[in-house]
Image (cartoon, rainbow, N blue to C red; front, side):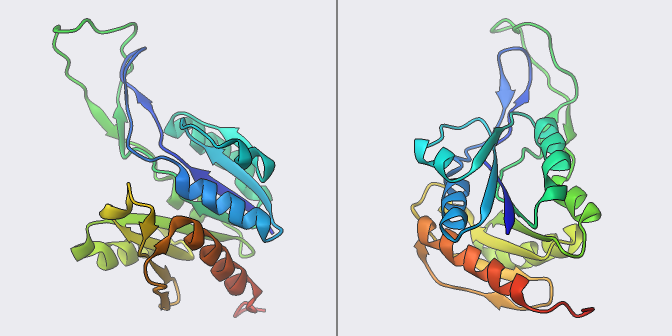
Length: 215
């Protein structure tokens, strides 16, 4: 298979110096790229502005992005040529409506008007062919994680979504639930993120090996 993975944060500029971003490290995306390559797949990694381990370039074609607009353009370019999209990047939900030129002086006071960023996952799902598969991610509070993940999967019209609680953001381990569009679910229990990557690639392979209902 040809697998396209997105990883890392976006940076949405406020002025020529400052930006809005998030705490995504890209570690999940790195693990997924390695696991997919080890399983014999052709991997392209769209990577945000984070430090990348040298080993990643040995297992994937790496293409860098900075802003949500950058990533949107790269998805439009690369997704049509891939069988699977794993959307692990943490795209900013909002960006400044206007870029301030130069550097705003400290103490001058700053008011920023924000606008929503495009829903990149839903955009890819709207153009997806029947022979393509999209896996999204959902990071949520534990009490509402399952309901919000399922709602997000249905709203964005993706094939599956991996839900995990907020506490996993800085942790080495993760306790996810994988929800499928057909109503099935898999809960593998707590495991290291590196092991989860291999498990998720296995699930994707299994799903894609099943005959389609219209075949």
